[in-house]
Every structure is written in structure tokens, then in C-alpha cells.
Image (cartoon, rainbow, N blue to C red):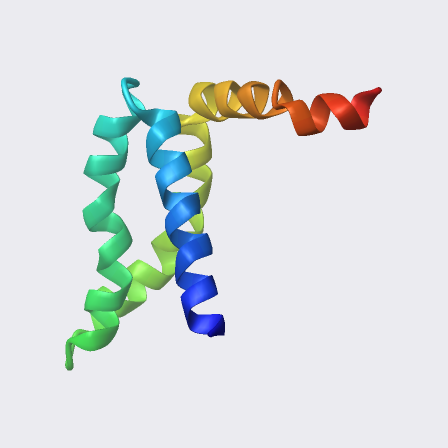
Length: 93
């Protein structure tokens, strides 16, 4: 039962993010970043790739900051959109 609820929550979150970035240049950036997101599991799964595993582990921390810098305008727009939601306007009053 909890597995179904977990899958439902994650799918709703993914749908909301995709709906939020639809029509922006963030779609192209997210598509370009998708292989970089799959790289850690690929490096961990392949045997004998110590160098690739080391490189991915060390670069991954910097990649988070790079994503924040690249998507800063879209993140700002998403937060502004979230702030206009009725639930948050109710809390502000």
C-alpha cells in the first residue's frame, strides 16, 4: 500500500515539474542533463571503471551548483508561481 502511495506522490511531483518547465528553455537543458543524471548509476554498475566512478563522485558535487546557476531564472519563476498559489496566499494573510 505504501509503495503505491510513494509511486503516486513521485509521479505527481514529476508531472508538476514537467508542466512547470513546458515551453521554456529548461526543457532543452533538462534533456541535455539527463545523461549526466544517469552517469552515476552507470559508473557504479560497470565493473572495472574505477576512474569513471572516481570522476563522477568528484564532479557530482559541483554539478548541483552548476544546475542551480543554469536554471536560476526558471527556479525564480517556479518559486514566484508557487508563491501565487492559493494555499500560500492564505498563509500570508
